[in-house]
Amino acid sequence: MAPDLRHSHVPRIAEAFDLGTDGRLSDGPVASGRIGSIWRLETDRGSWAVKQVEDADADEVASLLAGAAFQEAAFAAAVPTPALRRARDGSVITEIDEIHLRVYAWVDLEGPRLDLDARRLGELVATLHCVDHAGTQGVHPWYTEPVGAARWTELLGSLRAAGAPFGEELGALVPDLVALERYLGGAPRALRTCHRDLWADNVRRTRDGRLCVFDFDNAGLADPSQELALVMVEFAGNDPARARMIQEAHAATGGPATIEGPGDFAMVIAQLSHIVEEGCRRWLASTDDAARRDNEAWVREFIDRPLTPGLIERLLDG
Image (tube, rainbow, N blue to C red; front, side, top):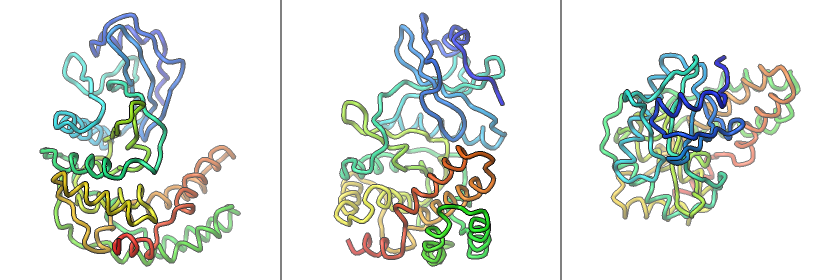
């Protein structure tokens, strides 16, 4: 594991990314992402988010670079997203003392919330879907393939044997997950580079009330209609009226996505299934109570707001 950033790294970070002088680094990470931690750096030229990249393999680095290119294209197309700061040599990732870093303009964000303005959400997603960008990351099984009944049976058996406190609750929901997986495997109506991670963690309100989308690390090819369905599930839930407002705003802003049937929910079905599977796998592999609590919370996000065939039917009827 790479060492953490220190205040002594500030002059070289500022020099590498041309950030000015008189820098002050936060005393520790202010947030963490899929790969690495986020630190805040203040200089005489502004505030910056310094993202420390930890233990990324070649495929993950390629994904980060592809996501950065899409984020730059989105920023140029007026999508509300933090500006990427390239190093003086044009690179996205720079190494300092074996620490790999990326830098973005700092944006003051509120915490994740599900009650963001529905119309503004639809407008934001439409603007993102209209970005003219040919990415390098193709379709990924995480967004398209089922976990499968056999794997769910194996997981539930392991969870019950290990005394997982959420095992019975999850077991009651697995039949719905298996039933939903029948909607996977169909051909997408369209493919374009999408964000592919538009959960409430990554679409937030700024301190001045605007919306902001960030963390493009998973960007790649997907069906924009399926991504819009994911946004409906996350931010509308059981409220068909909010889902309809998201769709109407998306269409009014020129977005290409249309929701026509259960198959348009394939992406969110696959993602949630894989997220829950990964949370269970990590819980089983945890070696201390803190890790088990963290991974249980991950699984309980789904248990508390499950995706079911009935929910999809309500959203479609709305």
